[in-house]
Image 1 (tube, rainbow, N blue to C red):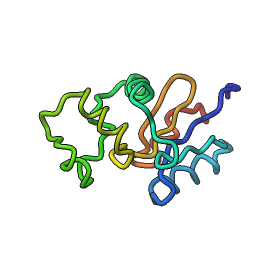
Image 2 (cartoon, rainbow, N blue to C red):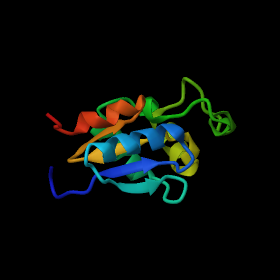
Image 3 (cartoon, rainbow, N blue to C red):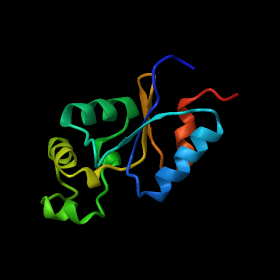
Length: 120
């Protein structure tokens, strides 16, 4: 594994986050844990994470949260609007997000976090 830290963006009360973190630790990976409520991701970092996942912005958005509708978001919202809302309302960011060596993955289901590591 590289000398770069593994970043684990989560919410401390999230059960899926706890499961993914436990899975990483079981495999000998001790990530730097960052609670998105305590240290929200800014727009630039959110764009960087979207790029690292290779997926659409919408894959990082929790559309079932009350803040989604309160922010006036819907299926037609632009990527810029979604990113701005996630930066303002961290509860809209899907979690956990694991970042390692220029790649990122959303841990839904939690087993996905292992995709970033050569454990063979």
